[in-house]
Image (cartoon, rainbow, N blue to C red; front, side, top):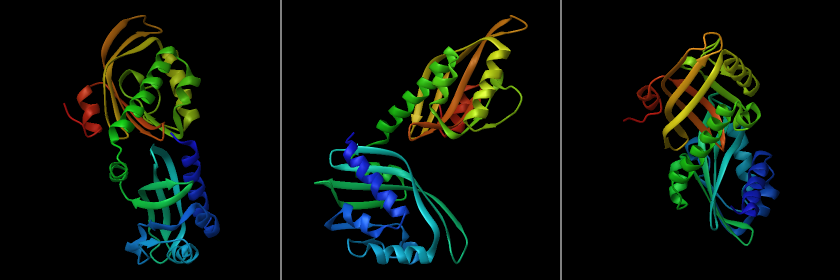
Length: 267
């Protein structure tokens, strides 16, 4: 991945969120064209260098604190795809906005010659000549790193793959005191409690299925109670939501079918 191009895209969004029109224009080729998603709010559907300040003024008249939060980048040659969310609220309607956003940049000579905005990650990836399969492969690897760290009972290695706002909904033998844990520290404490309950809790992978940011780990769990010392095995599955290389949410299941259905997949 071209780090220079990624840094240019990051600088673009930093300037966009700060409404720094000079900084944005400095990243654009003089003949560049930028498309937007704000046409439905009565704003221009595109702008060009030299009109950035006017566009930002119109944006701030229509929305309160409209910001872009980027979760991941993908790169192919001269194209960079930024995947994230746009958030804010309409000033007149007070309706909150929190929609998926994807931007495809075409970079030449360290300047953006074209910037195309999409409301679908998949559409942007396809437009850039990428596919969701590459993203799915990366997400599968994240899940396997988490599972491997779980089997080693390595909390530090495990939680490095968690987003700060991660949520864990235990299932089956992993359920301890509560049905839902939020935040990296809370989830880590819950796993520590789970390991204290089970002398052995080891999972074996049968297969992994992925679709975009949704990953389903399918396998079995081998357990031995710390007090009872009784061994048993059972099917086990986990549905993960992974974005930007981090786990946002995961939920355990005692049947494969339930996990697949939760992910919108089927046998």
